Length: 61
Image 1 (cartoon, rainbow, N blue to C red):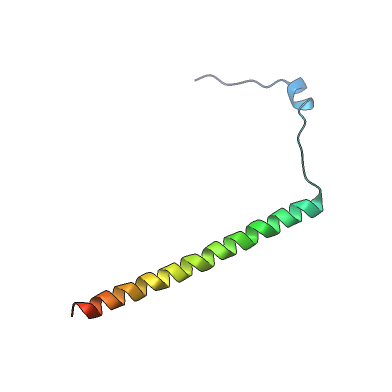
Image 2: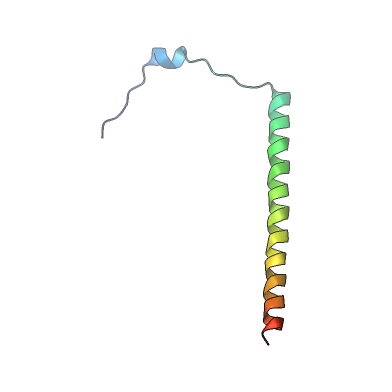
C-alpha cells in the first residue's frame, strides 16, 4: 500500500462550507434531541421485553 500525497496548493485551494454558529447550534440541538428520543425509546423497548418475559414465564408455570 502506498501513501497518498496532498500538495500544499491543493489544501490552500480547498473550499469548504462551514455553517454559521447559530446554524451549528441548531444542528447540534437537533441531534441531541434525536439521541435523547432514541434513548427513551430504547428504554421503553427494554421494559417491554422484560414485561413480555414475565408474561411468558407466568403462562408456562
